[in-house]
Length: 220
Image (cartoon, rainbow, N blue to C red; front, side, top):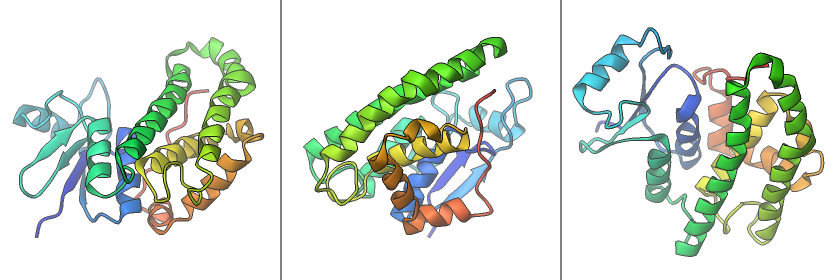
């Protein structure tokens, strides 16, 4: 029987959260890489996909299931897979907590993405501000959310792994990949969570895979 398929560029990018969720949930799937992204020299395979009409908003990633269902927009794909593979909480309130955590992490990522659009001469000052105040503030909030689920066995929401864990773990990995882990100095629960969740079988296998794309550091 054909497997579902994830199509994206030859990078982690917006598909990496999807890959991590699939890995943790043990979902077998195929993956198609259309080539490296370039705004001035689009990969031919990407151009062909756009022409096919499958990309409702002209962008990747694309998720396709064997019965013909296909979906774009990384956040929509992530939540769809979380719902269909028991990674969205045990009830509507836990699902709402997952949504809350995802929104909080997105706020942190928005702060980090400023490094991409900030002119190079101003980046050192922005990095200093991130380290000194912005990241400690947001990581403190996330530390509190993790601690609030004290009976959850180390998970962010409820007593089972969810999309919230995957999203939080990925954020912490991005901080480590960019040399920003010192911002976690006062967040012992987050530090333990990062180590523990990263050792889950699916996550650990994905991290060690030779097929995994390298990190994409923020500009310095």
